[in-house]
Amino acid sequence: MSDRPAARRIPLAFACLLLALLTASACGPRTSGKLVGHTRPIPKQVGGLSMSEARLGKPDTTFTFRAKRGGLLFVFFGFTNCPDLCPTTLGDLRKALRKVGPGADKVDVAFVTVDPGRDSSEAMARYLGSFFTGGHPLRPADNEQLLAVQAAFGAASSVTRKADGDVDVAHTALSYLVDEHGAVLLEWDYGTSPADLAHDLRLLLARNAGGTK
Amino acid sequence: MNRNVLPVLVLLFALVSLGSCTKRERHPMASEGLRGEAAVNLKGFHARPTPDGATVGAIFGTITAPLGDTLRAVKVAPDVAEKVEIHRIVQNAAGQMEMRPVPWLALPEDEPVELKPGGLHVMLFGLAAPLQAGKTVRLTLLFQDGGERVLEVPIRDE
Ligand SMILES: [Cu+2]
Image (cartoon, rainbow over all chains, first blue to last red):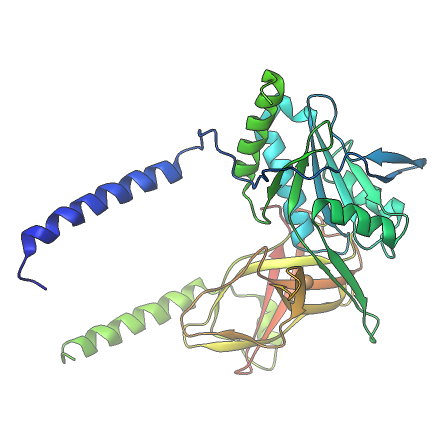
């Protein structure tokens, strides 16, 4: 192995340079026009679906899965007795919206409970209200409605009541971004950083503003 | 192996042990326990403030056992939560995320084990009151070697 030192030195130097370049690009703020979240060639359509929206001290209203005009709608499926995935995702989105700054008011946030048996309207409204003002806490009327909405997004969940009274909830933990027409523009994996969320939000808000879609 | 390596290793071990002793957080409660204090390093332990209406909470942090150990159980006072467990988030066969209790958490020798979002956490069920930023929760960790550690976990947003 050690009989051709010169031949080995060049690729090594090149590898170092490459590594340096990669590191530099990974550390700097993302400036590329490429989205971090996943897109589909044919976006899923959810704009025809609606669900009951909880409001504190007021009767429930009906919410339709569409963004405001020129805006974006963030959708996450979870439950209030969720210690990690749900508060992490909502907390990271809150951080991302602070980074986005003035355009953030064009982003609506919907949190759908997959555990309507335990999550009352009031619990949902209070829970989401501690992350965002003006968020949309959504509670399905029955299991059929939940399944229909989840199927449209490609989300899924199951609630299992065990013999000892404990309840196990399993759920997909992707987040979705919907446009004003009800098309799902983007899907983010659980754990996408606030910086990456902010990057994609800025990019899509700029696209909306530029009318380039 | 070179014979010169041995004294170096011994010195290194001594330094590491010394470091772990000085770094260890001492708590008055620890001396009240019958089991003695476990030789583990605890770093960055914190509980997340809970949203309004939440009945569960999570504690995160990093545990390193220089000589290896097993975390057997976690405890908080009944006026904090009804039940405490160590949990791991896993993806089930259907591709969904769910929490599974971890009855014993192995702590490999000198390898930091991180309790962090999306992985492991100390789960608090049936919170008596919301966890408020700025306050603390007293957490007891019980280890396989019979040792325990009591720490005041700050409640803060990371
Ligand atoms: Cu848990």
